[in-house]
Structures are given as structure tokens and as C-alpha cells.
Image (cartoon, rainbow, N blue to C red):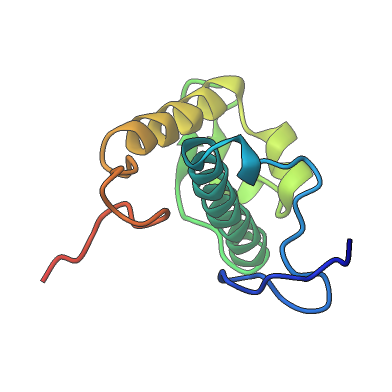
Length: 125
């Protein structure tokens, strides 16, 4: 057999073609679509994380991030960058972030099976 690369989808580029070492595509269209949706979602989260690093390096909100921690935590006290901000923010703050992302992901930005993968809000004109 001779390997013939297929270039029939967005992101499928020479010289490899469609690279599917786990053979997910052969496991059915529903499973493949789920992996496409997850890849798009993880890409969007990665873009938001890069934006976080770039913005917090140059900008800080005024005021307090948390009145309930002791001592109270100001936004300017949270260091820039991923690991520094991760350690400085109280656990209740991270719980709130995770909760709001989960709520938005399962309600407002839920994937409609009748739309293309990644099209979560549709055209609003």
C-alpha cells in the first residue's frame, strides 16, 4: 500500500495530511465531531490564557480582588504571569472562576449539534 495524504479539511496540510494516530476518525462521526469541538474549545482557552499573561504584565485593576482574605488582597498585589497569579489568588477565587466558566460553557456557549463545530452563538444580526 502507498500512503496518499488527504487534504480535505481545514488544518490538514502537506506533507503529513490528516494525522490521526489514534484513529479517532474511524470510530464514528459523532466521536470525531466531539474531538473537533474539544480542540476548538481548548484553542480558545489557550488564547484567553495568553491574553491573560499579556494584559496582566501591563495593566492592573484598581481596588480589591478579595475583601474576605486576610489581609485583603488588592489586584496590584497579584503578580503577572500564570504561575504567580495562580499561587496568589485565594482558592475561593479560583472556585468562582471555574464555576462561571462551567456555567457559561453549558448554557450560553453550549455547542448546538445543528451548527458547525465551534459555532456556539450563531449569527446575531
